[in-house]
Length: 154
Image (cartoon, rainbow, N blue to C red; front, side, top):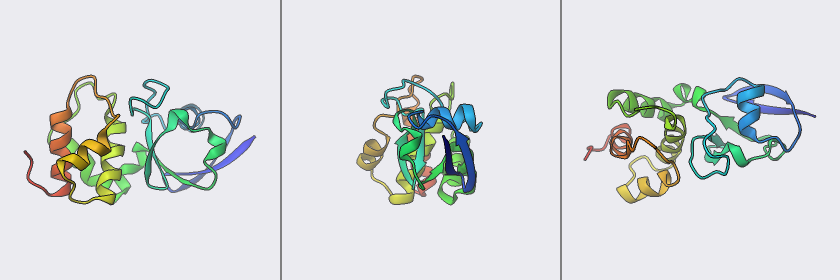
C-alpha cells in the first residue's frame, strides 16, 4: 500500500506493507540513511527520529501508525534552529568517536532543547536516557548540550 508521509518538510510516498517499521521505510525506501539501526527493540536510541517534534524510536513504529504526523530525521536538523545549534556544538566539541549513535543522540538532544531551552543535568539525563553510546562519549554529549543551550559547560 502507498503511504503519504511528510519527512523533513517534504511530502513523500512509500509503497510498503503497513507493518513495515518506519526505520526501514526511511532508510531503504526513501533513502534517509542517517537514521541508524541499532538494536531493533527501541532500547539503544540509534534510530531516533522526531514525530511531530517528539523523539521516537523508528525501529518499533509501523509506518501505518504515522498518519499525517510530521517526521524529522537527522538529515533535516540543519534546517531546525535548535538542531543547527546542537550540530554545531557537537562539531565544536568533537563529540563523536565512531559516530554510529550520534544521529540518535542529536535527535534526542534537539527535542530536549526545543522543549527545555536551559535544561538541568537531571533533565539532560532523563531526556538522553536510553541513547546508548558504545564509545562512552557521555561527558562530551552533556557538554555539547550545555553549549548548545548557552549554559556553562561543566
